[in-house]
Length: 180
Ligand code: 5GP
Image 1 (spheres, rainbow, N blue to C red):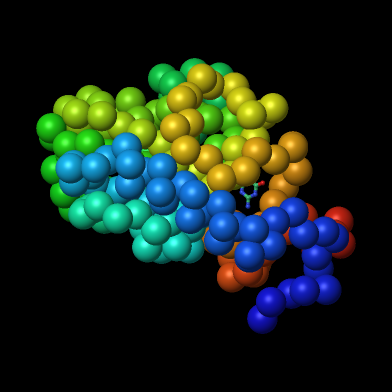
Image 2: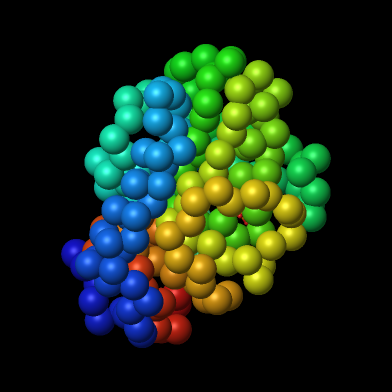
Protein backbone atom coordinates (compact mmCIF):
# COMPACT_ATOMS: atom_id res chain seq x y z
CA UNK A 1 0.00 0.00 0.00
CA UNK A 2 1.94 3.04 -1.24
CA UNK A 3 -0.67 5.76 -0.44
CA UNK A 4 0.32 7.80 -3.47
CA UNK A 5 -2.94 9.79 -3.31
CA UNK A 6 -1.89 11.20 0.08
CA UNK A 7 1.23 12.92 -1.26
CA UNK A 8 1.32 16.70 -1.67
CA UNK A 9 4.81 16.89 -3.12
CA UNK A 10 7.96 14.87 -3.58
CA UNK A 11 11.07 16.44 -2.07
CA UNK A 12 13.61 13.84 -3.17
CA UNK A 13 13.13 10.99 -5.60
CA UNK A 14 14.46 7.50 -5.20
CA UNK A 15 17.11 8.30 -7.85
CA UNK A 16 18.23 11.51 -6.14
CA UNK A 17 18.46 9.71 -2.81
CA UNK A 18 20.46 6.84 -4.31
CA UNK A 19 22.95 9.25 -5.90
CA UNK A 20 23.42 11.15 -2.64
CA UNK A 21 23.81 7.94 -0.62
CA UNK A 22 26.54 6.82 -3.01
CA UNK A 23 28.44 10.05 -2.26
CA UNK A 24 27.92 9.66 1.49
CA UNK A 25 29.14 6.07 1.33
CA UNK A 26 32.30 7.15 -0.48
CA UNK A 27 32.96 9.81 2.16
CA UNK A 28 32.53 7.31 5.01
CA UNK A 29 34.73 4.77 3.19
CA UNK A 30 37.50 7.37 2.98
CA UNK A 31 37.14 8.55 6.58
CA UNK A 32 37.11 5.04 8.07
CA UNK A 33 39.77 3.40 5.88
CA UNK A 34 41.63 0.82 7.96
CA UNK A 35 39.09 0.99 10.77
CA UNK A 36 36.14 -1.23 11.63
CA UNK A 37 33.36 0.99 12.96
CA UNK A 38 30.20 -0.15 14.72
CA UNK A 39 27.26 1.26 12.81
CA UNK A 40 24.19 1.77 14.98
CA UNK A 41 20.84 2.13 13.27
CA UNK A 42 18.22 4.02 15.25
CA UNK A 43 14.90 2.20 14.92
CA UNK A 44 12.61 2.39 13.31
CA UNK A 45 13.14 5.26 10.87
CA UNK A 46 16.74 4.52 9.88
CA UNK A 47 16.65 0.94 8.63
CA UNK A 48 15.95 1.62 4.96
CA UNK A 49 18.59 4.35 4.78
CA UNK A 50 21.06 2.17 6.70
CA UNK A 51 20.58 -0.76 4.32
CA UNK A 52 21.30 1.41 1.29
CA UNK A 53 24.12 3.42 2.90
CA UNK A 54 26.10 0.42 4.12
CA UNK A 55 26.06 -1.17 0.69
CA UNK A 56 27.95 1.94 -0.49
CA UNK A 57 30.53 1.74 2.32
CA UNK A 58 33.61 -0.27 1.45
CA UNK A 59 35.10 -0.96 4.88
CA UNK A 60 34.27 -3.77 7.29
CA UNK A 61 31.60 -2.73 9.77
CA UNK A 62 29.68 -4.24 12.66
CA UNK A 63 25.98 -3.40 12.61
CA UNK A 64 23.62 -3.13 15.52
CA UNK A 65 20.33 -1.39 16.29
CA UNK A 66 18.88 0.66 19.11
CA UNK A 67 15.45 1.96 19.83
CA UNK A 68 15.19 4.96 22.14
CA UNK A 69 12.72 7.61 23.17
CA UNK A 70 13.61 11.01 24.44
CA UNK A 71 11.62 12.72 27.17
CA UNK A 72 11.97 15.97 29.04
CA UNK A 73 12.87 19.41 27.81
CA UNK A 74 14.04 19.45 24.22
CA UNK A 75 16.49 22.21 24.99
CA UNK A 76 18.95 20.23 27.09
CA UNK A 77 20.75 16.94 26.79
CA UNK A 78 20.09 16.22 30.44
CA UNK A 79 16.53 14.92 30.05
CA UNK A 80 16.07 11.21 30.07
CA UNK A 81 16.74 8.86 27.22
CA UNK A 82 14.66 5.73 27.56
CA UNK A 83 16.24 2.71 25.95
CA UNK A 84 13.51 0.63 24.37
CA UNK A 85 15.99 -1.75 22.72
CA UNK A 86 19.65 -1.71 23.69
CA UNK A 87 22.75 -2.75 21.75
CA UNK A 88 24.06 -6.29 21.84
CA UNK A 89 27.67 -5.17 21.30
CA UNK A 90 30.15 -3.41 23.58
CA UNK A 91 31.11 0.00 22.16
CA UNK A 92 34.04 0.49 24.53
CA UNK A 93 37.13 1.60 22.58
CA UNK A 94 35.24 1.40 19.28
CA UNK A 95 34.51 3.98 16.59
CA UNK A 96 30.75 4.34 16.33
CA UNK A 97 28.62 5.77 13.54
CA UNK A 98 25.00 6.46 14.51
CA UNK A 99 22.69 6.24 11.52
CA UNK A 100 19.46 8.22 11.81
CA UNK A 101 16.64 9.10 9.43
CA UNK A 102 16.34 12.78 10.37
CA UNK A 103 17.86 15.22 12.84
CA UNK A 104 15.17 17.63 13.97
CA UNK A 105 15.60 19.30 17.37
CA UNK A 106 18.77 17.24 17.90
CA UNK A 107 17.63 16.15 21.36
CA UNK A 108 17.56 12.40 20.72
CA UNK A 109 20.93 12.24 19.01
CA UNK A 110 22.68 14.53 21.48
CA UNK A 111 21.54 12.29 24.32
CA UNK A 112 22.36 9.10 22.48
CA UNK A 113 25.82 10.35 21.59
CA UNK A 114 26.44 11.34 25.21
CA UNK A 115 25.37 7.89 26.35
CA UNK A 116 27.69 6.11 23.91
CA UNK A 117 30.62 8.29 24.95
CA UNK A 118 29.79 7.48 28.57
CA UNK A 119 30.09 3.82 27.55
CA UNK A 120 33.65 4.69 26.45
CA UNK A 121 33.22 4.65 22.68
CA UNK A 122 36.44 5.92 21.09
CA UNK A 123 34.51 8.22 18.73
CA UNK A 124 30.87 8.81 17.85
CA UNK A 125 29.88 10.23 14.46
CA UNK A 126 26.39 10.90 13.16
CA UNK A 127 25.09 10.09 9.69
CA UNK A 128 21.56 11.15 8.81
CA UNK A 129 19.60 11.13 5.59
CA UNK A 130 17.81 14.38 6.38
CA UNK A 131 18.72 17.41 8.44
CA UNK A 132 16.37 20.18 9.61
CA UNK A 133 18.83 22.73 11.01
CA UNK A 134 16.14 25.41 11.44
CA UNK A 135 14.49 23.26 14.15
CA UNK A 136 17.62 22.63 16.22
CA UNK A 137 17.31 23.13 19.98
CA UNK A 138 20.37 21.18 21.06
CA UNK A 139 23.79 21.53 19.43
CA UNK A 140 24.85 18.26 17.88
CA UNK A 141 27.54 17.76 15.25
CA UNK A 142 26.09 16.07 12.18
CA UNK A 143 29.08 14.51 10.42
CA UNK A 144 27.28 13.21 7.33
CA UNK A 145 23.89 14.24 6.00
CA UNK A 146 22.06 13.57 2.76
CA UNK A 147 19.87 16.63 2.39
CA UNK A 148 18.94 19.71 4.36
CA UNK A 149 15.20 20.32 4.41
CA UNK A 150 13.00 23.17 5.61
CA UNK A 151 10.63 22.84 8.56
CA UNK A 152 8.16 20.44 6.96
CA UNK A 153 7.01 17.05 8.19
CA UNK A 154 8.23 14.44 5.74
CA UNK A 155 7.55 10.75 5.20
CA UNK A 156 8.91 7.95 3.06
CA UNK A 157 12.25 6.17 2.73
CA UNK A 158 11.85 4.85 6.30
CA UNK A 159 10.10 7.85 7.82
CA UNK A 160 6.54 7.27 8.98
CA UNK A 161 3.41 9.03 10.10
CA UNK A 162 1.52 6.81 12.53
CA UNK A 163 3.52 3.84 11.14
CA UNK A 164 2.32 4.54 7.61
CA UNK A 165 4.30 5.67 4.53
CA UNK A 166 7.65 4.14 5.60
CA UNK A 167 7.92 2.15 2.40
CA UNK A 168 7.35 5.05 0.03
CA UNK A 169 10.36 5.10 -2.27
CA UNK A 170 10.67 8.91 -2.31
CA UNK A 171 10.84 11.45 0.53
CA UNK A 172 7.53 13.31 0.45
CA UNK A 173 5.33 15.87 2.14
CA UNK A 174 1.78 14.70 2.85
CA UNK A 175 -1.48 16.45 2.07
CA UNK A 176 -3.14 17.92 5.15
CA UNK A 177 -6.03 15.42 4.83
CA UNK A 178 -3.61 12.55 5.32
CA UNK A 179 -3.06 13.57 8.97
CA UNK A 180 -6.80 13.40 9.80
P1 5GP B 1 14.87 15.05 17.48
O1 5GP B 1 15.24 14.47 18.80
O2 5GP B 1 16.01 15.40 16.59
O3 5GP B 1 13.91 16.19 17.63
O4 5GP B 1 13.96 13.94 16.83
C1 5GP B 1 14.30 13.15 15.79
C2 5GP B 1 13.16 12.18 15.54
O5 5GP B 1 11.91 12.87 15.34
C3 5GP B 1 13.41 11.46 14.25
O6 5GP B 1 14.17 10.29 14.46
C4 5GP B 1 12.01 11.16 13.77
O7 5GP B 1 11.55 9.97 14.36
C5 5GP B 1 11.17 12.32 14.29
N1 5GP B 1 10.96 13.35 13.24
C6 5GP B 1 11.43 14.60 13.22
N2 5GP B 1 11.06 15.27 12.11
C7 5GP B 1 10.33 14.38 11.38
C8 5GP B 1 9.68 14.44 10.09
O8 5GP B 1 9.67 15.46 9.37
N3 5GP B 1 9.03 13.33 9.68
C9 5GP B 1 9.00 12.17 10.41
N4 5GP B 1 8.34 11.13 9.89
N5 5GP B 1 9.61 12.07 11.62
C10 5GP B 1 10.27 13.15 12.09
